[in-house]
Amino acid sequence: MGKNKRQMMSLEALQLVAARFKVLSDPMRLRLLQLLEQGETSVSALAEAAEATQPNVSKHLKLMQDAGLLTRRQEGNTVYYAIGDDSIFQLCDVVCNSLEQRFASQANVLASATARSASNRAR
Amino acid sequence: MGKNKRQMMSLEALQLVAARFKVLSDPMRLRLLQLLEQGETSVSALAEAAEATQPNVSKHLKLMQDAGLLTRRQEGNTVYYAIGDDSIFQLCDVVCNSLEQRFASQANVLASATARSASNRAR
DNA sequence: TGCATATATGACTATGCGATTATATGGTTT
DNA sequence: AAACCATATAATCGCATAGTCATATATGCA
Image 1 (cartoon, each protein chain N blue to C red):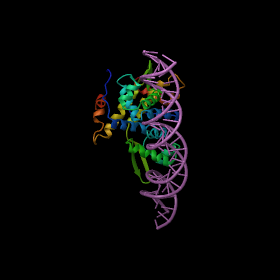
Image 2: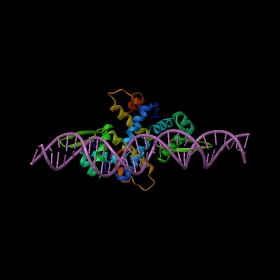
Image 3: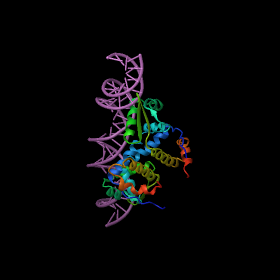
Image 4: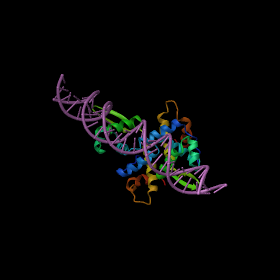
């Protein structure tokens, strides 16, 4: 209770946090993460589901793996990626709830997309 | 409890979420938010505290206000900005905790910066 | 060995954005 | 009115990056 007083973060720390947000600041990557929430998936399957080219998807996946968000498993010819950091979905939930509030009065673009995640939180 | 199955978000929704993350993906903006956590502050005060030029700070502030993260209040000549969406700090906490875990074994760049926020969560 | 499939990488283009500088806008004071 | 102050805006530059296309790598199979 009461307001927490955070101490200032160093510039390096802020850069790390900013970098994490940057990884999440692309619709295609969010789409891939959403697909991966259903479970480990191969690159080609992701490319088809996301309606994107294979090289493009491959790059995004590598970027997210390098950022520590995904894990990579190779089985024969095909490579399977999976969620490696569940905090991603906490982040998306918080953002969705905030956006819901913001657009509450307007045409509800987000309504169907975030209704469930909102009803999960005890607010 | 157990895993929640989210439903797919529309492309527009994903773009909105990505846009919110993008606003947070810049170290200077995070710095300004951190300064504003202490309370409403004028543009010039922010510029000095952040060691940045006034036009640069002004742009960042406007951008965050347009994104719904900040509020703006003008009093005479000077303009005061303040936090308009507290979810920002939830987001930063989640990211900090995730980064802590990730870099747990390495040199602890984040330790001092995030220790408190980590000890706040019941994990 | 040779060929097919799956993924990764490199070259290239186009777009977006952060920073700086100079200037404009708006308010206050004399 | 003019001068001064704080903030916002415009023009510009440089850089990062998402996307595409072509190609390399690598694994499996005939």
